[in-house]
Each structure stands twice: as structure tokens, then as C-alpha cells.
Length: 251
Image 1 (tube, rainbow, N blue to C red):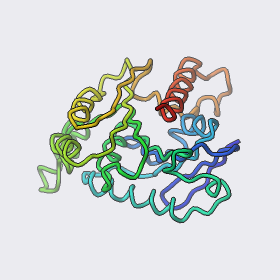
Image 2: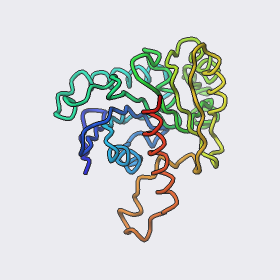
Image 3: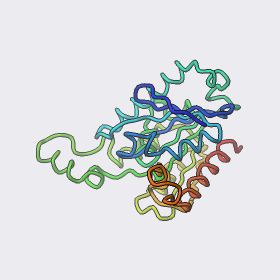
Image 4: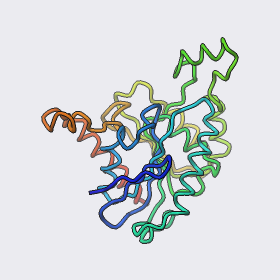
């Protein structure tokens, strides 16, 4: 069974078998403060398919560019300083052992804003991309910001984010996943920006589920037993993990 280990703001999960590659995961909104709990079943299902997982624990702020840079540095430091036996048999970024960036909701935006423009990974999987304004995402904070003269819009703003992605994001291989009952997904708009770049190979995949499909931690099962679990949500989770794994190794 995969085991969790905390290293500062990163939660690391090592698979039981030989690693197929490394996933650097950024969750969405306040679920991301405890990825080892909020996304437990999703990330452990990836580890069960022999992915190594590094998941960033953070609380969202208004300066998304600063947070994107902080996450990128932490992931890079973890890769450079990793001397575990599992890491020794896996070289992220090689053809045999890919480095995959994976984001959910706001986490997609933070990966897209990484200082390297996506150059130092093999692909990005963006689940339920959303790029709303602060006023829509956190209306109370936005109102207080205007009243007390502190920053009340995300930096970069939604429009600035898409302009920046079109101008500086260089990773051609991106899988955008939209769930069919997700009312706040904005993957189509992101796809248009990505596909306008020369040499783009981005794809859109629609699966059954909603915005929180990746964030089922299995807490009801842990607290109340298997009878309280939702088999449909578990099947959706497994299908998602299988799709990511198959796509990651496709030509």
C-alpha cells in the first residue's frame, strides 16, 4: 500500500511498485490545504497505478502568480533533493518516466502560470479548469478589499491569465478534463487559447461527474464503513485515473 510522507508544504506518496513517473499535483480552492485528506482516494488511486505523487498544501490568496512560482520552486526542490530508492529507479522528465503536472480547478491556473511556461514537464492534465474573478469566487473578500483599499482582484486577473497563457505557456501536450455536471467549468475557453498556439496538441475529454469528483476523500467510508460509500463516485474516480494513465503514455 502507498504511504504518505510530509516534507514541508508537500505531501509525498510513493507507490508499492516500480514508479512509472512523477505527478506534481495542485488542488483547488480550500480543498488544497489538506490534499492528503481532500484528494486522498484520487491520489492513492494514482499511486496504485505506480505513479509517485507530490501534492502541494496551500491556502489560496489573491496573488496567483506568486503562488504559482512558489509551487514551482517547491516541486523543483523536491525533485532535486529526492534521494529515495523509488526516485533512484525513476528519472522524471525522461521518456520512460514522465513528469506530469496535474491540477484541479484553481490548481490548473497555478500550473499554467509556472515560471518555466510548462517547458520542464512532459504534459499537463487540467481537471475542471476555472478562472473566475475574485468578486465571483470570494465575493465577501472582494467587497472588503474595495472598502478597506487592499487587493480585491486576483493577480493576474482572469483576462490577463488567458493572455499570459497564450503568450508564454509553451507546453503543447495538455489534457483538459471537463465533468458533465460541472456548472463552473471553463475548459472550453482555455482550450481555445491553447489551440491558437502553433504546434498545439491539447485535447478535451468529457467524463461523468461534477466539479468535486476528484475531491472525494472517502471520509464517509472511513468513518461509517463501506455501506456509507458511494459506488458511482468511486467508479467515476477510477475511470478518471485510468484515463489519465492511458493518456500519459499515448503517442
